[in-house]
Length: 68
Figure 1 (cartoon, one colour):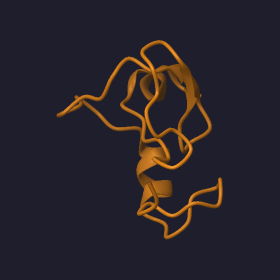
Figure 2 (figure 1 turned 135 degrees about the vertical axis):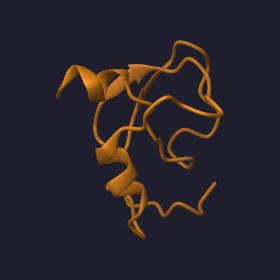
Figure 3 (figure 1 turned 180 degrees about the vertical axis):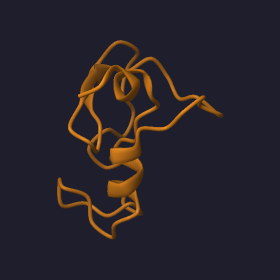
Figure 4 (figure 1 turned 90 degrees about the vertical axis):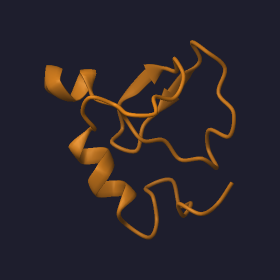
């Protein structure tokens, strides 16, 4: 994984991560695991792998984007 993707804003499954606590490790749609530090309204850059996975009808975990 490149440093650019490491610094990018990742997307997470809302069903698998309904309300993560600050600092709690969460796994992004691209497979990267990072501590959760809150949501950013307007990220500087988005993870391109997360964006591609989020565009699908079903996430790798088996949930759909509409599940909460």
